[in-house]
Length: 488
Image 1 (cartoon, rainbow, N blue to C red):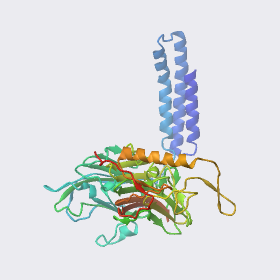
Image 2: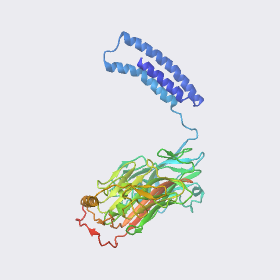
Image 3: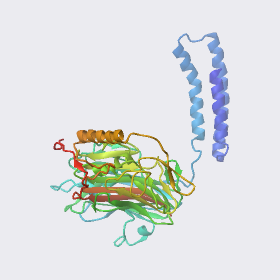
Image 4: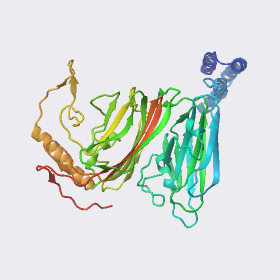
């Protein structure tokens, strides 16, 4: 009897879920109803037979029950399978195998005219770029480009790509990984990106929306002299809006990439990683950060976010490695997950790291600025110049009211010093401290890539390279904690 009830429930659910579907779905539902009647009759016959001669083995009885239940469930899934799909949603795409790639040549790999906007690239996969005979592997710095809408309409000989990125950037990796000796802990394959082979296997499912037309290209590293061989796969869907996590973006969404080269930065200096002008709304998609210094002191930085012209920041983290969902200068080494990952870590002061925001929305409505600071000054309620060490409630006058509580300042200072010594022991770095826990270790090279979505909506991927100076003037109270030389 239980099986009969299950059949009836499945039939009712199917009929209810398909009530707004097309005539074809109604006919399928009708046929299913006929099937249900036959299944119900069979169920009754089966019940009578079981009563007269029931199986003695419990497993046999379960199998007999499933003979009725499974066909009914399959029919219900079949009838309702098309619900929610639109006739305008059509797959497009192309793949290239053993494609010739001449030196210093940008080769078109795909073009598509959108018939029902928005159209969206849903996957890009570059298995590899094989080098010319006798030349060094340089697939990591091969370049893929997207020409979108107006840029796709321009003369290919003079057009500027809307988006360009290296193959490593496509996979969310930084500049320290090499083609011949990867130290990124790969293979890995995440929902948004991955790298699954020493020779490449890089892919991205980060959406690339367009309204009218798109053209994709590939180019070997500019220093390659001979003819390479490439492989590439691209796919997309028409009439397919961009969904960032559980947030559906406007049809006008656009992807943009912000990038800077290696940039010197002084100790405690602020450096803008991404800046969207006023009048545009958007969402942060991904941040990639490359950095190198004599120590990991620059990781004390609290990430600052200024939405909608705000004079004071929203603090996105309590430290740089904290922003990337780790702690204590990444003291457990490399990791890769859907929300963040560390793809290079040499224990000397260099990192490649990423943070995605599809499950952690960072939004703005009227422009924004994302700011990194080389090291940090921590005290008070937090402002542009200081990372907070407490929460302060805003009052009606706009001033912040400090929640008062008692604590032993000497114990607190001792705890901070003990924590710092443990970091020194684990990572063998040099860190300079003051009474206000102001870290003054310089950063030689830092980089970042930020992905955003704005409206007019631009999804922005920003690649920032920041070079922090190693020559600084230390306060009189700063002292050096000596450590042994780093080892591997």
